[in-house]
Length: 115
Image 1: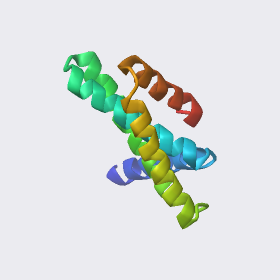
Image 2: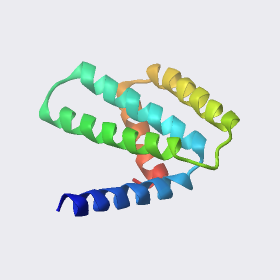
Image 3: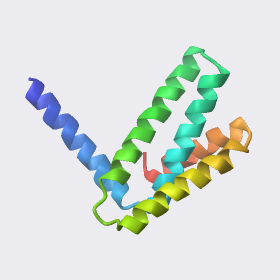
Image 4: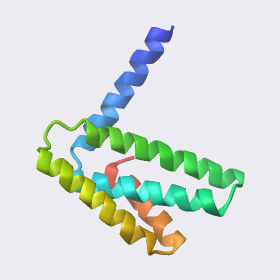
């Protein structure tokens, strides 16, 4: 039973990773930053059940996107460095925005990444 569950989980993870691999790596990097900043803002602002559910959703999306970006085989070392710089720049940009705008950016990433 565990083996079947593991294989099913691996298959779904592979499908998400393959789908996200078609997305530009810069978009993936920006979205990782958006999910991270949005979750961080919610964690510091409130602790209600709705916020906790949203934080869990953002964390899951960030983890999926991070895995998809990390497992891409089509990126050169220069592309990998560029994605890290893109993420840092996006985090800095998002830190200056209002919380509602950051949450909207995270929601927009869902559609850009096909989540």
